[in-house]
Image (cartoon, rainbow, N blue to C red; front, side):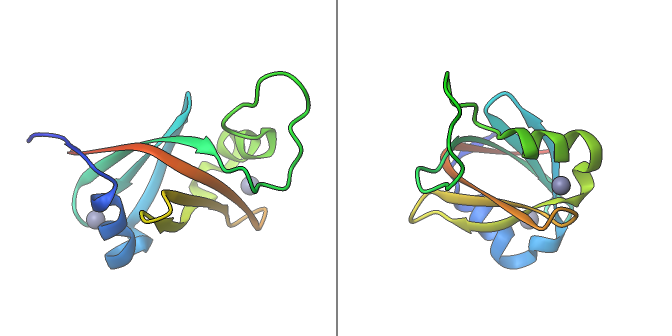
Length: 114
Ligand SMILES: [Zn+2]
Ligand SMILES: [Zn+2]
């Protein structure tokens, strides 16, 4: 299957069956989200959204904040996609265990079948 570069598929999965979306991995500056319903995988490149309230502590801003990296390391299954808005290029991750939301901007989304 060809791969498609468009966040539209991500939006569609989120709208239709967000509970079947599983965050597989945080990798570099992106995430890998698979959809159990469609049997497809979205690779989403992200950057931090400016309105994020957490101050950046000097140096280069990492895409993923320290608390989120800790979430991914210790309880990745608790992390889910909380919101997708392709009009604003926005994607929010949510950790169900820490009850914390992490806002991002979508730079690119590639969808392919698994
Ligand atoms: Zn889907
Ligand atoms: Zn957490």
